[in-house]
Length: 213
Image 1: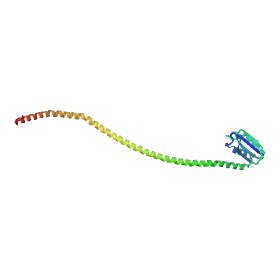
Image 2 (image 1 turned 45 degrees about the horizontal axis):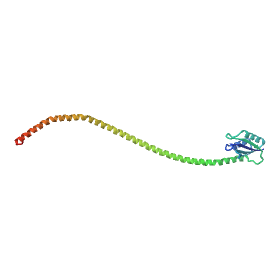
Image 3 (image 1 turned 45 degrees about the vertical axis):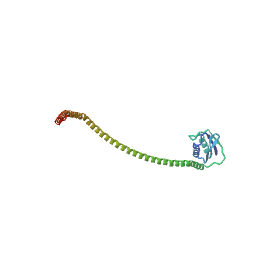
């Protein structure tokens, strides 16, 4: 018994419908089977051909009516008689494997390109990390040097505090020195005046002896 099935709907392509039907046919020991994606007016269509004994075909038809892939959207299913040749299910299975392989090859090639690009990115990233580690090492050196400068500056400030303290000590002694100088002037002035008057008297006496006015 041969059977032609038309599965029509807005989403019957790219949901694994043909492979789903293949598995149903194998489960019912269908010997001849093939399925192809096509179009029917505004919707997509899966065109199915099956051949087997009457019981197997009836069981397969019942499964097609009640089961479908999860993501599919089917509007209607049409069953028709068929008199033409149908591919052996084993040959169709090999055909499906070839189709899948042809689809997989571009994906594998793209994946290879992506992996090659990823390796380049990783290599560049490793270079950036190495450069960053160098920058961090240099920065640590600068921080260490800055700590040394700060420590030296603390020493200079401490020494300057000592100089200021000593200068203040010397400044505090200035009033005492001024008092000592003032006392010395007071001690000198009386004696200086007496000696000056004596000198004036002696000069007058000499002038009188010499007959000088």
